[in-house]
Length: 154
Image 1 (cartoon, rainbow, N blue to C red):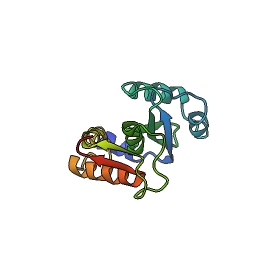
Image 2 (tube, rainbow, N blue to C red):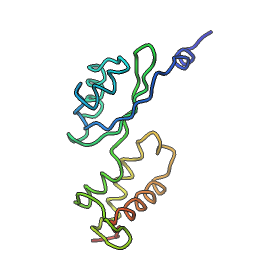
Image 3 (spheres, rainbow, N blue to C red):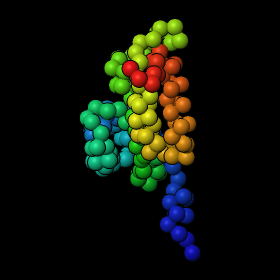
Image 4 (tube, one colour):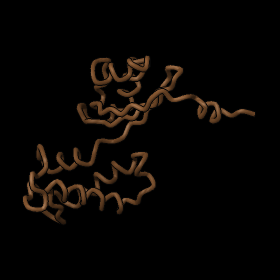
């Protein structure tokens, strides 16, 4: 007996497309239109589904999306939360990181901010198996490489 999982697993994949799209801002215009159009995927179906999935985020929040396009012109996609660097820049209130990380500190954030970012990132598919402590350590490392100092209390 063939199960649904077997049928889905046998579909030939045409491409894997990675895009960064603003939350709630998927439109058939570039970058979404050309990327999906070349594989003859349904643009409006993607835009409606993506916008519905990302409506809980503030508009213009950059969302990483991975689209798996199949040869029968169907697709599946997963949406990841915004990048750690984007969260750190927002928490620190800066436009960009230090030009000389390790030498020049551009801003500082509290440990509480790191924990809040880690809680959001824990919902990502690649971070689900990681402990909150491991995600926090990774975020602190990213902050250090951006020239952002992490302190207990400001």
